[in-house]
Image (cartoon, rainbow, N blue to C red; front, side, top):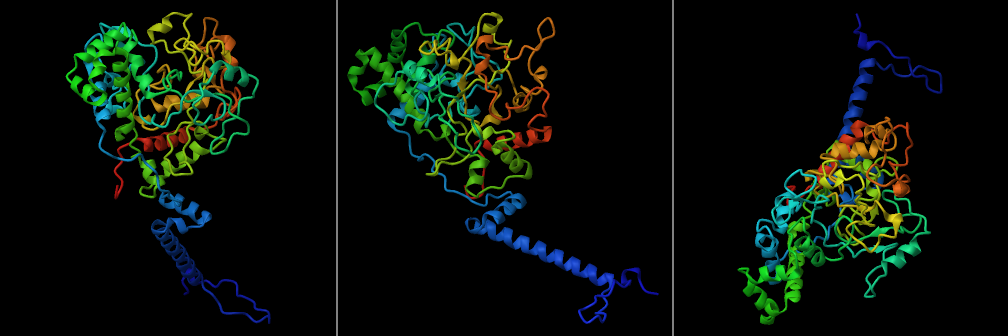
Length: 483
């Protein structure tokens, strides 16, 4: 009796009408198995070749290789900052950065709120830090990370101003920009219109243009290092153990010029932040993937695709993910300002006053833009490098993990009742951390904020998990083969 697998298949009838050779089902199965094996072998060969010579892969093949292996089919050479010994000025700046004696309390330094072990951000999950002469004064915003600021341009409004030695009148620029429609921000695509928005600068509101100016801010802030006058700072600098280094670098006469002493001290801090590689290491898994030295998992790769998808997460619309044309690694920010409408954080002591509002660019901590109300509620877009290491998020520290952050982006417009509190009447208090007259400043044009109430959210829960998996690849300290 014939085996069932030997049952005859319909005979092939050639053109002459005579039956062709009879093919058994077993023969067909052998053919299919060998064909599949051949395809798998071919894919293995292609993938192996792609790993050795990725630059030779056609785009279509490169995409397949990327999906299968997690390797970057088009690796690049990243132009990292030069790694060199710190200059004498930077070494002086490092001592100043860690010197607690420069504070009124004698217990606080720059490093107190900018821990090297936590990507130069706070080492705790407090929404704001404590400071002041007795370390009992609460701040107003969580200190941002000091990493990846070395390429930050001075504050400006409108398209890239380029390098200029001419002082910029911000009020005039703001007035000129007031009638220009805001550009829609789309991942991996150039804006269709000039991006007439604030950009550049340091702090959440951009009020400092250089690392030197930024460094002096906390020294004089009454809720931070709390020195009453510049003379107080100068007097403390004159009592430091590194005063001789000041004299050697800047000349002995500097001790007789308090304002110059402070200026040079803060210049030294800025040089430390610029020269020390730990402030811009570019040693994340994503950096090595860009260079073809690491592979992304399926979840990380899918997260990257969603991150760059202009219709989904659209994260790259603000957090630029591509290297520059000359090979500079991406710093994951366009350094522009956005009004996102994040919910009010009741844990901040200042927010106990219902009349207090932190409105970013137009106040209360900078006073040169208070009349430019079209920018009220706008805050600097921070870098996403090392974002998975942070303990609080946004300018008011309202969220404490990336899932909460992604839910905000996904549900702010489609299901605001899941994001904002309700008032006594049960009405959802949308944009409750910004006065009602400025709600029109909040971004509702860019994905995923372009969804309406009741619409399907842009991302599924699995999408969000994959995006978070990708963002974890942006943490420095990854050990790649050959790195």
